[in-house]
Amino acid sequence: MQTNLADFVKKNQNSTEAEAILRSCVHCGFCLATCPTYQLLGDELDSPRGRIYLMKQVLEGHTVTQKTQLHLDRCLACRACETTCPSGVRYSHLLDISRGIVEEKVARSNYNELKRFVIRKFLTSRYVFKFSVKVAQLLRAFMPAKIKSSIPPMNSSAADWHNTPHKRRMLVLDGCVQPTLAPNINAATARVLDKLGISLINVAEAGCCGALAYHLNAQQQGLDAMRHNIDVWWPLIESRQIEAIVISASGCGVTVKEYGHFLQYDTAYAEKAKIVAALAKDISEVIVAELEDLTVLLKKASLNRPNKLAFHSPCTLQHGMKIRGVVEKILNSVGITLCQVDNPHLCCGSAGTYSILQPTLSQQLLKDKVIALTANEPAQIVTANIGCLMHIQRGTSLPVKHWIELLDTLLHPSPLSP
Ligand code: SF4
Ligand code: SF4
Image 1 (cartoon, protein in one colour):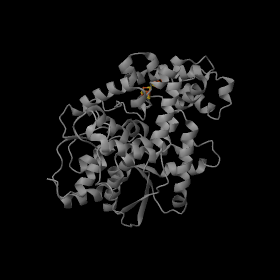
Image 2: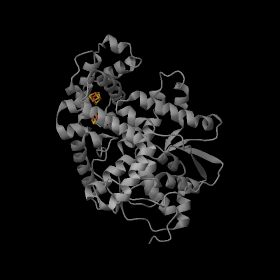
Image 3: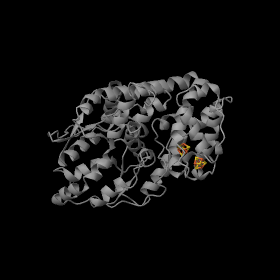
Image 4: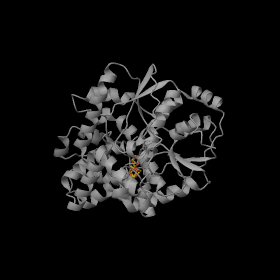
């Protein structure tokens, strides 16, 4: 694709990258077939190719309007188009660069600005969020069913991390909303790793991975959150006390794995960010490397496996981190039968804050996803990201869990379980 970037864009540090991405698109349109918003809306401007065309106009200095902003806002950033693209177009990086410029050029209404500000502050302020969820949990019984399904019941069984000291140690990212909404996920991660001879260390000062603010176009706030995590983890990394940073939420994992990219122009943090990114591992990458030991442990436990399950692979896992078939391999290896799920490449509609900001499209995607997940009558649904978990749970009465919780219950069966 021919490009002629505007002078104000050429001054940006990332203009070379933007130009290279634009030029790599050959307009073939293969990506249209797997784009969820194009499938729903049928408008080329809601497809990856159409959005790349809009972003080219932005970067070449053409007038940017609310229409441009609308089509970019409607993008889920699910990266299904990156998986499909034969030319290797780094669509999501182009989207980040272009959204930053559009945000400066097109004013949002006061209501929209306020909504985005409140979401950003509320979800990333761990204590405010925790307090609000606790209050909502106390009132949960009196709430209408629709709201109730968005609030998880209180979970008192999650606290036990089994922190036995082992020679092998890994850091864990607790994140912003997961410790409140589903504290059992990282507790289960710690218990499973403990069985495998690995201690999990949580540095409490670490917080949100930075994705939430960054993708709400508060890019500096997002970068500050990344720098903060690097600072609080650095002493353990520098002294070589840990071998990896484990992340159980794929939405955070994909971000930490790209810290090197996000902070590439920050001379004080670029090198550290690359090291942190190289240490970051989704929990499935850690477990698959220990699969032999895990299957031995589970054989000893000789338990009944649950009935068939449906696995929802989050976009951040399969398209963002390009981890495909790994969770499925782990679950199959421990004797769990997985159902066939149609269109597994499609987003469930959660996509960070998309379900709040684009509720209509998000609900349509949720409806389709639940139909696909439940078509073969699974006993439960498992996934790998807190956002998808909470979102899918709103659309079904089947239990939705993180797959690591399932592994944990096989390794540590409750005395009360059948
Ligand atoms: S993004 Fe990739 S798949 Fe889509 S039109 Fe461009 S080159 Fe083709
Ligand atoms: S990121 Fe997802 S929604 Fe956005 S253009 Fe690509 S496939 Fe479509």
